[in-house]
Amino acid sequence: MFKKYKKLIFALFVFATIAVPAVSYAALVPCGTEGNPCTLCHFYILTQNIIDFLMWYIAPALAILIIAWGGFNILIAGGDPGRKQAGRKAITAAIVGLLIVFGAWVVINEFLLFFSGQGSGTATIFSNPWTDVTCK
Image 1 (cartoon, rainbow, N blue to C red):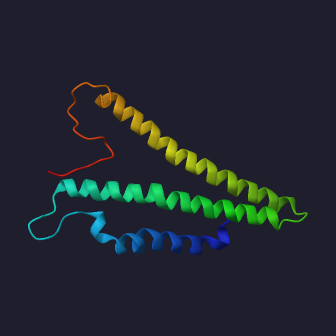
Image 2: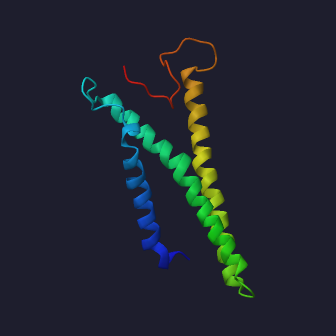
Image 3: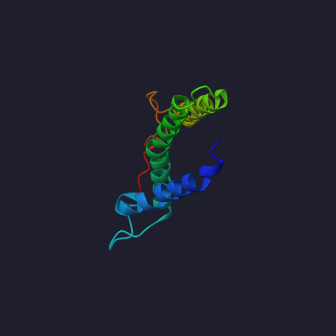
């Protein structure tokens, strides 16, 4: 269904993942300034910031666009059952994709919280939640 729009979708994805974070470069990694050299820990912060950006900004925005495109296909389908089916598939794929992304986050979060003992009142080797990386 999206074969003829592959280049446009790829260009939008590249723009969103490169240009938008480049605008807020200072927020991506809090190092590299005088008196604050970058360490391996800052690489983890960069990775966490990129994952957060993709998960909380790009995935929902992309899903909304795909759902809108699917709804548009259903709206203009008229009597064409193939176009209606393509619209339904696009909407279903967007919703399932979001469920997979956020479901994976919940599973990983619960798994790590269970094995780290966070929230149980017991002492652990972790001083922060896994989603909060801090460099010392």
